Length: 359
Image (cartoon, rainbow, N blue to C red; front, side, top):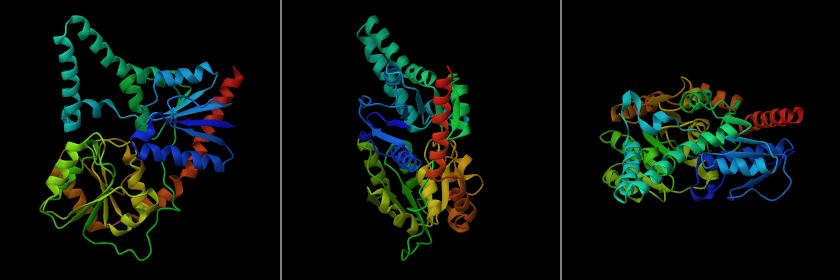
């Protein structure tokens, strides 16, 4: 079997979505699958049995390009629900959602000033962005969701009826374990991820103000959010906050091993790969209450409302005082490795190809 794992334009902004594709590809190869990885705008011009698209950058035209070649298409949508796009818990919205609304209003308002026809064109363009995802995911042969909650939101939010299979996100136990010789700082917190509004580093910095918890932030600044990065650095001034910058993925284990707790108070997560990595390295884990991370972490982590600084602070302090969960590390070893992901992914491929053959 030869498949293309396709994430158009993924190299522009690296992150967990890229890790998901790369590690899935590597694990599939170990199962005997011939894999072509590509981030090019167009599919590679070679013989394939199936196309597997990753992320919300896979549009309807990408699915159609596979269809024209007679190829079945499956998609890992990494869907961020409407509740994240438009409101938070109890109908509150965060800075990112408000900024998105304002940006859209400015675009539509500016078009309106140019006249009725530009206004109609702009409004249709905004709507088309939303509809494109529905067209792409509805046209796919199967959707490989990271959690049951993601599947439920696709149906409830968008009415997408495409067959789904839950394929968990995962971690490599061979790369993530406590690093010998690295001393864990008892009253310390770590955040691993790009610096951007979605990740909520600014909220974390403010939430820990006045505590005795030191904070290390590991990750590159998002290229489109310079102002947010400056706000984070300004808020951290004079506090126990260190900006480490970008670190190669294979060197993260040392940073996890030095921290008492890893904190991910983001506005939404389908999984939170860094939470899984941190747990295997001996960290207590704090995660956002928004999204589907609880399906993975269950009751073996602390959850916080990213909009509530007191909730974030309380979760971090409780996690630091309680220490890591051995049960979580055991469950990750048993169910959330890239080998598990590859097994489920290959089963989905075979299912899709069998249905095609039976037609």
